[in-house]
Structure formats: C-alpha cells, structure tokens
Image (cartoon, rainbow, N blue to C red; front, top):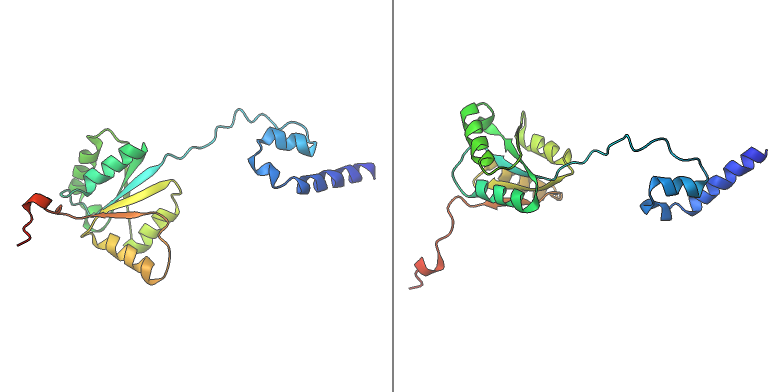
Length: 179
C-alpha cells in the first residue's frame, strides 16, 4: 500500500509541474518526478533536419527564379530541393541541366520528382517537410499557379510561402516613358 501511495504522490506531483516541465531537460524532469536517472542518452544522436528551400520547376532553365532560389538558400544557410513536375520528370537532360546550374553555386541540392496528380503531390511534399522555409517558382509555372489558386479557393492556408518570379524583369525606371 505504501508503494501505491508513493506512485500516486509522484503522479500528482507530475501533473502539478506539467507546464513547467516543457522547457526542462529530461534529467531535471526525472529528478522532479523522483525517478532514477534515464538510461544512457548520450549514445542517441538527435536527428537534425536541415532547412530547405524548394525550387518548383517544369525544367525550364531561363529566368530569374533559379538565381532567386539559390540566393535564398545561401542567405538562409539551407539546402535546395529541385521539385520537378510535368515533362521535366521524364526528360532527364533538362533535369540534369537544372541540377548542374544549381550545383555550380556550391549548395547542397537534391532532386524531387512529383508523380501522379501534381497538385496533390506538391501538397504532400510540403506536408512531409516541416523544415521547408519557402518555395520559389516561375510566375508562368502552371503547377505553382494552380497550387496557390486551389489553396485560395478552398480557403486553406499555404503553410510555406510561395515566391513567384516573373520571367522578364521589369524595365528600369530610367528607361520608362511617362509621356
């Protein structure tokens, strides 16, 4: 009976300190609860997910979206995922050309090919990567536009910002005519 009352006391004490324990290390949590030291946790290495920037592309290499994605990944000290869809998944030369352009900048890169329904596949890609910082796409990219529009039509949030870069940069202000 004494053992049961000690266990009951520990449970109540744990409930009383549950909000305070959110920021405590495991060792202190065990000490507060009166439980012996945890097993050797030094041998377990935590899995650290590297932050990622996604470049959503149909394989086209022209335009400023590649440069923007590379710069964003460099600024954030993140890796770059090249998310290919449409014809780019079957055309390996376009995919390798795009990969070569990005790797020249010295950024850790990986290719991700979307299969099936591209919008649903892109949704799943975003949901499976909590370390994704932002997505970059060409403004004329059909999948990116459809992805953002479908989220707006359903009144859903985009959990990752989508930056859409125009193919042709605007003319400098000095070259514009106001006549």
